[in-house]
Image 1 (cartoon, rainbow, N blue to C red):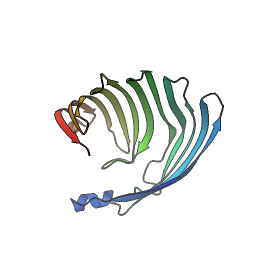
Image 2 (cartoon, rainbow, N blue to C red):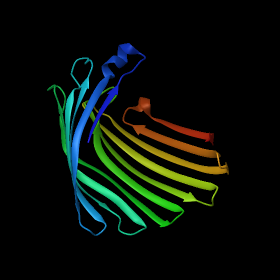
Image 3 (cartoon, rainbow, N blue to C red):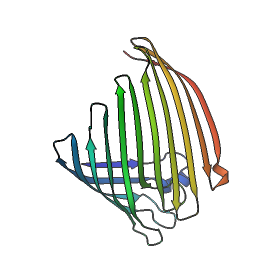
Length: 223
């Protein structure tokens, strides 16, 4: 597998020109079937991130991950996957702090009835910050419940928690997000959705602490 990603900002060029970058990634996954509804796998991936310009200390880095994991479908009701391994981020500039640590990604889907599904997700990895710091160590935990009340009405409840620990300066962010919606299909080609989203952001940087509530009504039309 391979991918290439390019990001370029088009406004506030005096600031954002230092955030334009391209990232290339290559990797392979090797599977081993146990013939009991479970597959084990080994995943290897490497990539390189290059920024167009640097302010003082370059953000260019090479990233490597090696995972071992399993995918399973224990019964017709339960399926999921989990992988855990080592992640490394090596910066080209010695002024940046390299990372080497544990990374993981997992999900479990439970469908006790054909019309209701509960999903649990978790992950831990690093990502590049938009402004300050060398990298962000990000941990995510989430739960989602989808239920079809009848042929026309479906509801969703979702919760996610995101913990972001910055390297290169002192900052820790904690984000709690709650989301709920009800979708009503009043025509074969038209849906109406009522939704509410609440976000609670806490941080050691008091300037970015906030609570936000969004309530909306969506109409979706299809041919």
